[in-house]
Amino acid sequence: MKSNEQVEISIIIPALNAERTIFRTLDSIFKSNFNKELMEVILVDNNSTDETVMIANRFPICVVKEKRQGRSIARNSGRRESRGGILFFLDADVFVEPNYFSEILEVLKRPGIGGAQGMIIPSDVDGQESINKYRYRTIGEATRETFCLMNLVVRESPMINSAACAYRLEAFDLVGGFDEALERHEDIDLARRVSYSGYTLASAEKARAYVIYHGEGWLSYFLRSFADGYTKIDYNRKWSLPQEWMGIEGDYDYLRQYDSKEDFEEQSLADLPVGLLKEKANKKEKFNRLNYVKWAIGDLTISLYGFFKTFDSFYLLLFMNLIFKLFGRVLSPLRKARHQGKQLIQMAPAEIRLKEITLKNRKKFFLKSTLRFVLLRRSIYVIDIDGHKLLSDDVAMPSLFSYATFHHLGLFKEFSVENEEDMIFQLLKYRKLIQ
Image 1 (tube, rainbow, N blue to C red):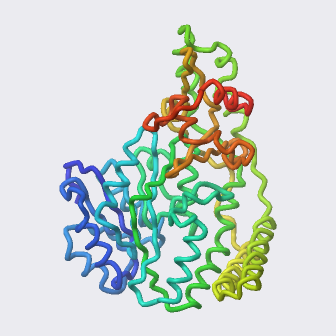
Image 2 (image 1 turned 60 degrees about the vertical axis):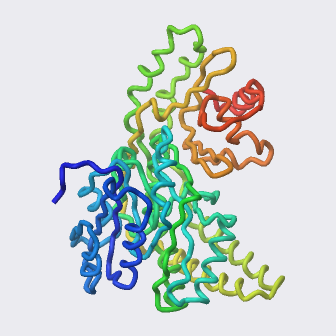
Image 3 (image 1 turned 45 degrees about the vertical axis):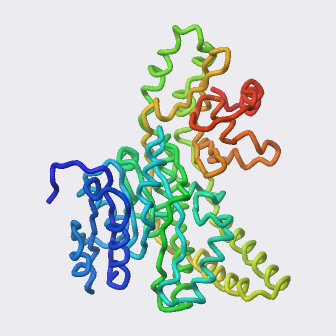
């Protein structure tokens, strides 16, 4: 039963037969340095047949029963029972450091931030020493030793791993929460929808969580890779559907408030974001499943090259893992499509989504309305959702998308810089990133 008393954060844990790990998860939460009076912990029992619930009831938490199977269903069920303004999602095999919640919260309190993720590090407490060494090295190399998936420049979207992450309530609710039709990759999908809506995503690398592998050995691990490859087509099919971006009707009125001000460039009103968004809303992204097979074959080639160059057994294990994933991708067209028709994407309010910049001469402009931002620890990467192009992946202009750039343009003001903003403005204008 929900109380009327408000809390600051809600920690939602989906659990299915987690008796081996749930105590460590909950114990780490209640040993954290976050004020326990300002948090609630909701464990969603997703049809456990072991002693998960009995162990969980040793802690002052709320246990919710969800009979419909699926981790996205369980997480959404936990959201419906929550009272906090910030939603934390932890898997039942994850434990956190004492400052985890306060560090994530510090990032999410910045204006416009909708979701955040800290480091997720493979734990060595489960006795699976050889697998853990492989996992640690694989994730470490892929994320440049940050163990934060948001540091990956990925093909499809910014990646927030739902094993340990947080979202502002209004951002989560705006896009409708987790997609319950997705068996896997639901966390990438949610991050993409929150980003598309206009909220900024951010990494919080001082916040560390540890995940316990609780499979039965290498075969179990490889089968999970097969399932990952086999189900990825659901995500790809969904994002190949035509998109309609909802909630942009107020953009014109939002920009009109500057029309009578001398410090606003009148030509900006001639190219309103409303027109651009309506023009692009029904365009369909190209989806070619063969591309994913080609990329997988490329990864296999790289792993074999690594082995023959170094004779390091790590690359053989990587090769085997990629074989299972590739096999899943080859068979994935056998899956029945789970999404049909048009994908509706709700947009955030204009004051969150439209990024205003002010130059030294007090003239105001708006950045292109389809730009979306991901804040990393030392850099920013920028996505143009018109075609889902990664703009910051440009070796010709490596400093264009730095913290310094956007501070000088009046965005992300907490960073101090010395660069000349007029040159930066000209670069943005040259790249057609000014409305």
